[in-house]
Amino acid sequence: MDYLALLKSPVFNGLTAADLRDVLDDTPHRIQCYDKDETIFLQMDTADRIGIVLEGQVQGQKTFPNGSMVNVSTRTPGDLIGPAAVFSRSHHYPCDVIASKPATIMMIRKEDFLSLMQKDMRILENFTTEISTATYMLQQRIELFSYSGIGQKAAFWLLLRHKQTARTIIPIPESVTKWALQMNVSRPSLHRELKKMESKGFIHLSTKQIELLDIDGLQEMLSDH
Image 1: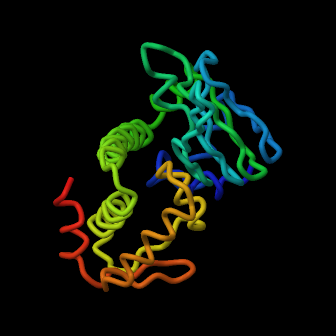
Image 2: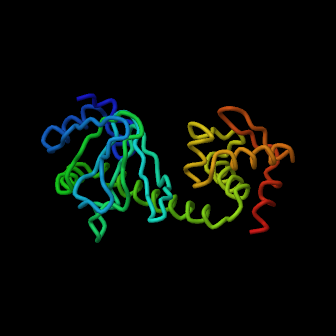
């Protein structure tokens, strides 16, 4: 077991590799590997397992009856998958979870994860923080989708990252295409709006990042909401 990979997980924040070995050695778990595009959880499957991404990348995808699809979330090494569903009253996964890249996942059943948290209060505290943070981010995502214009959505996303990091250089998440998918808009439309924002002097757009040049100008874009 590569405990260093698990140390990337916020749920194990503050623990050493030796600490992890102690709590995991007598906690039942499985290491499962998935190929690209392979399904990890299906929407409405019984939610009885929590996953921790060790390698690769996974995405939560919600498909609607009209055929449209929204990328609900992206998970990378250290991230949890399925915790809210496992501890919810519905006990079902709310969306499909797909390996967007070849992925290795540690799977822990609900009862074993509860036992794990009881073994070390730091894990319980970290898990509570993660669930609370996820709830907060969901609220922010709902606000994002409340904006009708693509430019407004982009401005809100950039201002939110600025507020979270206190930085004016905002990395683009993987690519403009991936970013567009997260916001449920087309790549050409998002790129067109970013170029408009650049022409107004609000931002400077490069391949991997966006520099915020006029915070007030971006804020004014949201005032028409």
